[in-house]
Image (cartoon, rainbow over all chains, first blue to last red; front, side, top):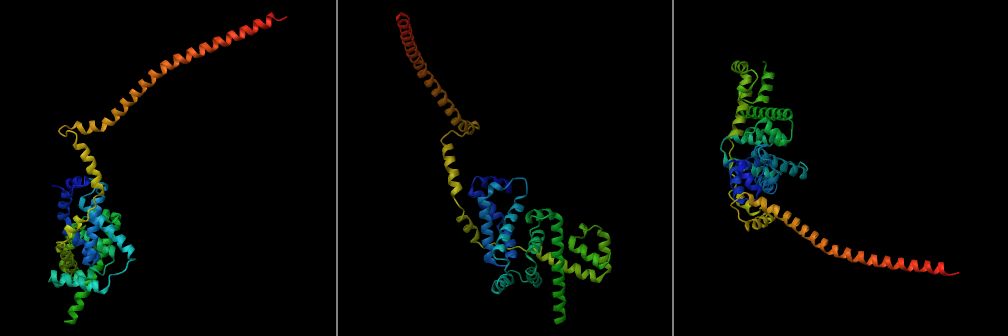
Length: 181
Length: 154
């Protein structure tokens, strides 16, 4: 069953269709949220809020206009931006970051993965969001632009800046490690 | 292509050389320039990590979301569905007919009301007309009597 068919059912408050749709996209959405928020608890709250918004705002979803996953990520991204505004762009506390690193160390043994994940947290929020949408979530530049309410050109520029920053930090880190060893 | 241009293209298009404006020139430059390889390998390592990331949501998250779904709209929906469920649902015209039913009901009531009103007023008009006629005749008789009296007085 296609996402749009399930969304038609969700519009009539069909909880079974909603559960199927949620199970289908939950891991992917959580994966995006945890990298955006850099904190498992915040990611869970954000994902929960997103799905509640999908349920209560299903009538706002125009079937066929954009892909469901694009709309879903748009809902999550804008909730995240609202959350950031409420927190006045405060960075997470040091203990949150250590908890995040521990989580990643348990999940992935690769040093590169750990390093990239750590470097990702140093990117500005909008650059990180765009980069994750494009590479991790597999959206096209047009879709990223739709999700983030940006022009395609602005999105391309944002992605280029994010790639450059990450690449430069990564190269610098590797060269520093080589010098130490 | 120089190293600066190469890096700009790398940041703009990523490590899939096929998406670059001139893939052949990019590939040749990459093969003969060690510095370009360092940047390209770094970008590729980053992309690999980003693409390969698969994270499982906590098992408790899905049930928690389902438990917290609000019911208000659902209850409003169910009332309407319950109302419709009284009617036979096998035919497609039933929902349309059920929607038009109040319209016809209102029309019938209005028509009936008009008929009742006209029945009553028809009689009323006759009585009012008869009353007025009687009153006018009496006035005329009184006026003519007064005139006669005036004419007869010396």
